[in-house]
Amino acid sequence: MANTPLTITFLGTGTSSGVPMIGCDCAVCTSADKKDKRLRSSILVQSPSTTLVVDTTPDFRYQMLRIHNKKLDAVIFTHPHKDHIAGLDDIRAYNFFQQKPMEVYANALTAEALQREYYYAFADKQYPGVPQINLHTIDTTPFVVGDIPVEPILVWHLKMKVYGFKFGNFCYITDANKIDEEEKHKIKGCEHLVLNALRKEAHISHFTLNEAVNLAAEMDIPNVYFTHISHQLGKHNVINNELPANMQLAYDGLKVTAHI
Image (tube, rainbow, N blue to C red; front, side, top):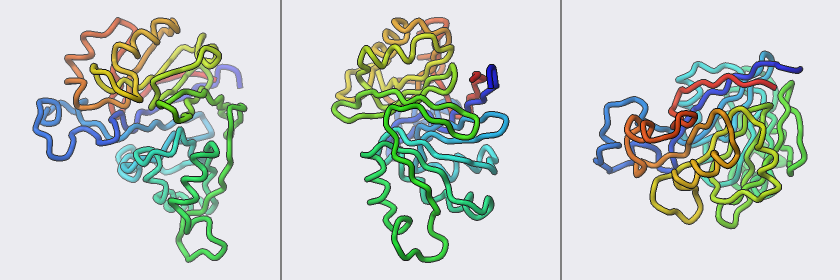
């Protein structure tokens, strides 16, 4: 498995409202730049034999269609907020074509939310066509999906426990405003780090751009990408030019090559 390539595709890089935001005519929401069009935050992780997605956003169906994805082995969830779980019902297409249940991994809080939100998928008597799910409750213990090792990283979204995930030398963290020192040790040594950077102004439960930049610099990661971006942050090309050389705003469709 050593040095097995991974391809990570950013399916969405926007915050919970997406960009453009409904009803907004600000310069970012009306921008013609494709990099200013942001679906809700999610990534696709692919090895030569395994494909998984982190979070199924409200845009999940379209995200899969626009990259022409036909294979999905698993879904891994960061936390139970609606902008990260609302698309799970659309795994039904993969159930149908792959003729098997979807492997779904979530911490206890998120698993409870999934069972409540998608009660019909977990009912004793299920009507035809409901999502078929094998639900695995995870903690911070590392696990493996196919040939992809997954190491959960506990971060804080105000007072909510959220999981970031480390796939080989690639680390993905969204919806956080604090990372404890012991969890930072899991990040150090990675080649690629993704952090949420909502906007420049302070926020109660998300890193600001400056906080994310400072944390990434502290971790000394060679390649840094910022995601979960609000229209309040500014235009992609403007903000990107303000960042250190090894840091950039992620955008929908961006592909990164990593290794496990």
